[in-house]
Amino acid sequence: MAESKRDYYEVLGVSKDADDAAIKKAYRVLAKKYHPDMNPGDAEAEKKFKEASEAYAVLSDPDKRRQYDQFGHAAFEGGAGGAGGFGGFDFSGADFSDIFGDIFGDLFGGGSARRGRGNGPMKGANIRKSIRITFEEAVFGCEKELDLILKDPCTTCNGTGAKPGTTPETCPKCGGKGQVVYTSQSFFGTVQNVQTCPNCNGSGKVIREKCTNCSGTGYTSSRKKIKVSIPAGIDNGQSVRIRDKGEPGVNGGPRGDLLVEVNVSRHPVFQRQDVHIFSTVPISFAQAALGGDVKISTVDGDVLYTVKPGTKTDTKVRLKGKGVPSLRNPQVRGDHYVTLVIQTPERLSPEAKEALRKFDELTGNTLHQNDKTPEKSERKGKKRFMDKVKEAFED
Image: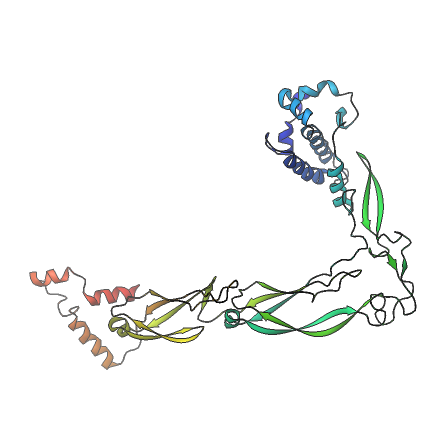
């Protein structure tokens, strides 16, 4: 009954203003998920597959979609005796060819809309390796050497894989095409699936007498040293591509590439964010109070920074151009941000303790602590210098 059917847009999970591409994409997902060949014996999956196919047959046809938008399911109640289909629904006019080419390609490894790789030239596979460098090497760049085992065309058979004096023969299974065609039956008739020939692996050739040097592979392996130039400013996890240092190509195709992933070791002092460097530098109370030069370590070496008198703890300073070079423009560098932290001494000699007590008295922090005269009370209402120092230490 029409009343028992779900809304076609709801079935496909699309909005009523969805375009043809969105409708096709939604149906492709559902068809792959609920196709009977992927769910053998599952009646519920078959029911959902039929439901999605019926919805697509209507919404993919402009005329039928227009009728459905105007009259709903009632527009097709009189068409049950049409050209067959699921539950008597008329599928005539619905184009499933490109959809089911993709679906059967995924199900069976080929498909009428998919082709095997054939026996044409193909680029070789990429090789992936990783390398570890220091923080400084990542900032300024470096040269590294990788020890790899790489394949090269066999010099005995010139890469053919055949014994010298013989040549590869045309594959009898695919006739030299590198592809074979399989047919299968579906709800929509016969579907052809094109796959890479398993007899020749897509090369279109078979070797009767194999080269003894390479065992018919056409390649020999040897250990090689490859120099890798690490650019200044590279970050952890980024890769360097070295072209034509990967696996050899197939049927005269170019070699693949070597992809070197860079792992940067942590630095005990510096931390990096993008092109900027961050660090923390301890200073003494005397340096913070009186000011003076403080030695700060950077990736370029130690620099002297003049601390202003009365500097508070957690003061941040910026060393312009002392960060990491940009990968796009090595002439442009980030900055180095330094946090100055006042250190509280933990071990003091008797002389140092006495000096601090004297300092405390001179700054009026202890001497007038219990003085309650009006004049002193006004002074207590204001934060003394030593109070600020204590607050800094507590922070």
